[in-house]
Length: 191
Ligand SMILES: Cc1cc2nc3c(=O)[nH]c(=O)nc-3n(C[C@H](O)[C@H](O)[C@H](O)COP(=O)(O)O)c2cc1C
Image 1 (tube, helix red, strand yellow):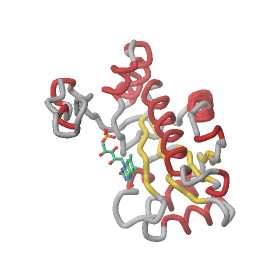
Image 2 (cartoon, helix red, strand yellow; image 1 turned 60 degrees about the horizontal axis):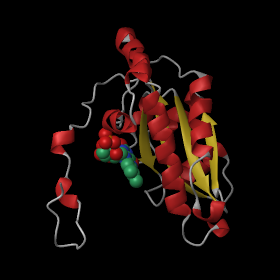
Image 3 (cartoon, protein in one colour; image 1 turned 90 degrees about the vertical axis):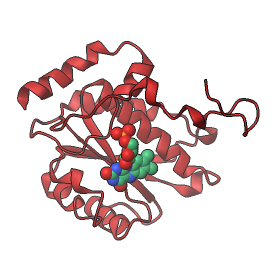
């Protein structure tokens, strides 16, 4: 598995277009025990800090953890869909201040999250969005683990680690082109 994780690092130099990065980014939910380098996490955070937000209100806060005593309990924050924290070696939790913007906090947080996911994939690091907002007891547990104040909403926790599973890149010939509409909604022959 170390070889696979090393190969993932090489992917950094093999993707030379944004489209290829989008093709390659997949949700990774199983990780090796190789820690993610701090420089790579810093790179993801810088990318997140450059994400667009409505009126540049920057309503997000990013909480970084590498602490297994916090990562493992996150695996139980939901009955299903949080298993990636059984092996994650790091995570970035995104909390937002909804009073800073006019109902755009979720969009602002989602864009920042996507910057992190893409920056992780570019560096050969596996990542997966775990939804926290309004999911069972997930907000309460996350708030408690990371001491997040009540006036912030917790959107998601992004699990990070070197991949211990292989996911296929997106196939450009199999995208849902019928989702694309030309000029009117009812004209969606796509290409
Ligand atoms: C808003 C949002 C919430 C998500 N929540 C979860 C989640 O709670 N648990 C999980 O395993 N994956 C979650 N995902 C990942 C999606 O399942 C994944 O992006 C989707 O299946 C497409 O697969 P891909 O990321 O490999 O392209 C979430 C993704 C988004 C955008």
